[in-house]
Length: 400
Length: 143
Image (cartoon, rainbow over all chains, first blue to last red; front, top):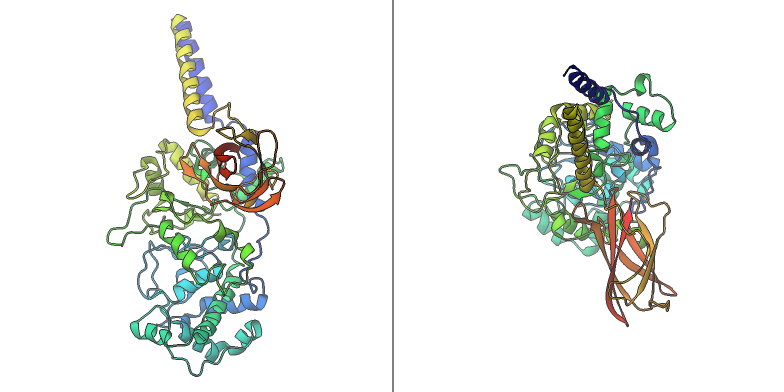
């Protein structure tokens, strides 16, 4: 009997020891970890749809516009209102507030230039086309297109013309006119000639191109995880500010292994740039949000898309739009995979800030509820409380 | 001692079963046919595919060249080729909508707009319509 208990005790100790002491990383794990490092990120590709994308004058002008509250109907809202420079260019709110509360959470801007489709539903296909949407949204900046053109002529004519060439003659144009906004603005827009509308749209699109040139300079900074990954890749022992705790390393291994987080949160930006239905619940009181299903239609119809007349791209450059999945059941309530870089320090989470903490996010992944509409891609995540804490600890290494 | 042996055997069975379940949930079948050259389902065509990037990589939009011939090697021209596919283990389709974009001569067709956004087992499916009739073929790709 004594021998029986001794053998059992030895077995228990063996397994406990194996579980407590982190095993060496396998070659496959090392390779996966290296693939997530920021140092693996290729150089920022050119944007053929914006010939001013890498023009320093345009970027400087774009920065001015980005922070200028006069770019709003009330004189109190700028791009920087919801994309705060000291908060990863997002606003920490469940839903952003411009002139009024919107339906969605603002997205951080680091390396947004690399996303083929912008917004949670991908309804714009370039940074510059994205920048235009809030400018004339009634709940965000709420300004119409001719008002923007007049504003630029009155305040920034020389800076604008140095980059984009002469401004058009605006003297006969209404003070306020645009395809959205109030009825009299829409009527004034309809009353303008095609040439006048095109001239105003050209100025309007150039504002987006300047803002995009500025936003291209907003990039992710290396974190402790990157220093760890680079040390592993180089065959060095991660030490000092490159070291992960046993708990963080355990979380990393879950992230790239059994947790399957890396399925969608892959690559150096921790996103696959795609749209997924993960069964995130709707927000009571908001209209139905169909996500990518609506966004795909909107981007195809957008006059400022890659194939539109204001784009500088050749049609053959517009591969994202050309090969885009435009319809199908998978688009229903699908939302863009957000980057997890910096995520630990910017709650709340999901497209309308449905979850206040990472704990709530993991609750959702553990329960994997059916989607309110369409089919959720999630399978229930089976993790212990200890593993959940480890995953959250690992995410912290992407924020510091 | 017998109870110890039984305990170890039971533990072993549990571990093996656990690994099998994990494997079934995560991985493709071990005997997956990864050939890039096949006869279509009804035997009408021989299809060979080759990626334009090597090695295949995540998140990169790229093309493939599909070479279409009769089973005895005669090139097929004027074929209509529809492209589909997805991840069988995840139950979803391709993230992009690839298309045949150009005829390159000698039965070769360029398939543009392929991008894999996840690691794992993908299928690329081609529905072919040409003079010999309609047929289809499925290729497996591992990333």
